[in-house]
Every structure is written in structure tokens, then in C-alpha cells.
Length: 422
Ligand code: NAP
Ligand code: HSE
Image (cartoon, rainbow, N blue to C red; front, side, top):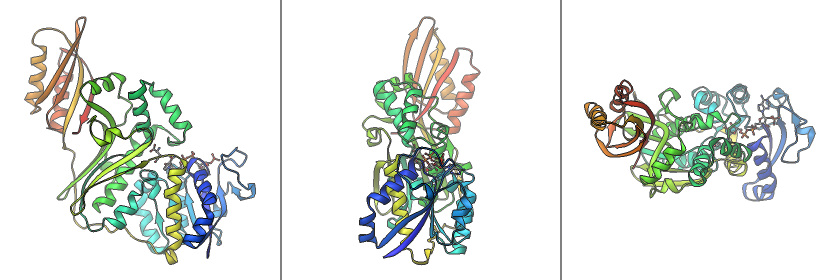
């Protein structure tokens, strides 16, 4: 039996879930894994705060250095969230030779390139399964079970909060702010939920996942990102009429040395399996050159699902004798990050209802090389709503067409532009 002393940084949703799992499955972990795991310290901001788990008050501390410099602490598990001071604490722990398990996608997406060499230098391990897709074991699977493949593309729902919000908006007609509050109460949302609804959380995860899949660093500045704050009830209704649902999708493709990575609300057919992914669930479709298509599905947020991934990393870290770090090997060669990808588009606009308007607008699409698949018109007084679905077009052609339309006096406003995947 190996005795292990843990230092936990954070005791919110994830930290409490980790304590629950370590306690409820302690006997099993001892029996099957040969590990006797003791939580020696827990870092919090406020020791007096009421917790959702029982905790011996003498274990709680507000002094990070007491944990990071305690020679008896073998491993640090971080779930404080945010970039700082989490990054500084993780780096210090690695420099002190302590392996680190983290759920912090912001720190990994921004500082992986600095943390991995620190881990390698000291021989400590750096594990972050919980940083992407909550309870779905996607990182270990790609690193340890799909090494025989070139991964060519993947597409998925990797933010639980926005999927929960879009599900309730489309199924119950619920109001955005009310549903966001419910997502916060259920522990799905980030400490600052702007990161969820503006797509930033999914952007961090997409940067990490595409780096692991493509074995090329995909830095945040090369990940296109648009959140769900501009998706309206009207768009959800039109989408349904047209046979689509709206999801916040993360899409990444590698073609030769070109990589595209993007997060945005997307129309997907109601019959597509991703459309059936509801509430806080996540799902990822992935395509490898040997294995073909794979799909992963599970809870993407919440205390126990996330704790499942964290505790698995803790066990792996304890069992890697001497904490030897498994570096994520990167491919050599220069990569070009693609911005001019191909997509279909849904465009909704308010226009003056008079002869020739539809032809004028169709002409602006055509002039920029964007061909139309379908048009719906609904009239309200002197105005009309026009809803277009385009054929496949280049992103830059589409943006140029929209720019031309903004200067066109028959268009009162372009209300929505949402990409469409089949
Ligand atoms: P949370 O509920 O807000 O908990 C954060 C914890 O960290 C709290 O216990 C807080 O202490 C402590 N903390 C924060 N800043 C601190 C500081 N400067 N010094 C000391 N303690 C500090 O957050 P969470 O939802 O558990 O998320 C934590 C991390 O896990 C984030 O990186 C998040 O992205 C990631 N994650 C979350 C989920 C999820 O479903 N929630 C899933 C996967 C990954 P007090 O309690 O005293 O305020
Ligand atoms: N806020 C995140 C989400 C937590 O909603 O997916 C899981 O990473």
C-alpha cells in the first residue's frame, strides 16, 4: 500500500466533488490501486464559509505556501479556477518536484508551453484530463489509445453551461438570464460565467484538444471564437422550422499543414446525433485515419463527473513511479492556421418590403461568390424579414457580402448570422 498526501487548491464545486469521490471510493482505491490517499491540506479563500462537504477545519488554510512547501505533500490538485494565482502555484509545485493535477483549462491553454518543460525538468507530472469535457476521458484516450492515428478532424459540444442554456431555451422557451442562473446554481458555470456564454471556456478547451489531436500547438490567438449571447428565441424558432437545432460547436480540422479551429453557435440538422445532446452533456465526434469515426458522450460539467476525471488523474500520477512526466510529443514543421474556412450560413435580416429588394440582396451575395440555397420571407407592415440559407461558401467571401449589405439602404438591419453544418 502506497501512502499519498494530497494538497488541494480550492474547495468549490470541483474540489467538493473530489473530496466526495475520494471518501466514498477510498476502500476500492486502496484495494484495486494499492493507494491510501490522505487529503493533508485544502486551500480556500474563506475558512469560515459553509461547505457542501464536511471537512476538518484544521485541514483548511488560506496560506498556499504552507501547502506548496510542505515536504510531506506528494501531489497538488488545483481547482481554484482563473489564470492567477493558479498558474504561479502550479509552476511552483512543479519546480518543487510535486506532480500536479488540474481542472484549469485557462491555465493549460495559456501556459502549457511553460509548464510542460518545468515538469520535464523536475520529473514531476502534469495531468489535466478534467480541463476538457468534464467526465469524458478524452485526453487520456487520445494520448494513450489513439497513438496509431493521424486525427484529421473533430467536432463537438464541449461546454456544458451553454448546452444547458440552449437546450432549455429551445425546449421550454425559457429566458436566457433565468437559465444561466440555474446553470450557476447547478455548478456547471465558470466562477465568471461570461467565460461560458462568450465561448471562451470552449475556446480554451478547443486549443488544448486540438493541440493533443494534431500534435501541433494550437495557440489561443488562432482559435476563432463567438459565444451564444446573440442567439435569440427568434433564431431558435426559425432553425426548428428549417429542420435544425442550434448548438455551440467546437470544430477543428487538419489538412496537410493547415489547421482550422473555431467555436461558434451552429445550425445542425435535427436528425444529427449532436442535436440530441441535451442539458450539460458534452459529445465529441472524432475521425482518425485508422480507426475511422468515434463518438464520445458524457457529462461535461458538475461536481462528481469532473471529480471522476480528477481522481483518475490523481491515481495515474501516484502510480507513475517517480512521477515521470509523459511529454505530449509535437510534430515538427510549420503550420498555417486557416481563417478562410468553408461553411454554409443562416442570415436573418430586416428589409424594406418593396419590389426589387430581394433581387438586389441576392445580387450582393452572388457578386461575392455566395450562392443561395433557400429563402424565406415574412412580411410585417412595410418591413419584411428575409431568412437565407447559403450553399457552401468561403468565410471571407461571406464576410465581404455582409459588409456590402451593411452599406445597402434597403436593409434596415442584419439581425443574425449563424454558421450551418450538415
Ligand atoms: P468554484 O466553485 O468557484 O471554486 C473555486 C474554489 O477555489 C473555492 O473553494 C475558492 O475558495 C477557491 N479559490 C479561488 N481563488 C482562490 C484564491 N486566490 N486563494 C485561495 N482559494 C481560492 O469553481 P469550480 O466550479 O469548482 O471550478 C474550479 C476549476 O475547475 C475551474 O478552473 C473550472 O474551469 C474547472 N472546471 C470546473 C468544472 C465544473 O463543472 N464546475 C468542470 C471542469 C473543470 P472559497 O470557497 O473560500 O471562495
Ligand atoms: N463551465 C464549464 C462548462 C465547466 O460549462 O462546460 C466544465 O469545464
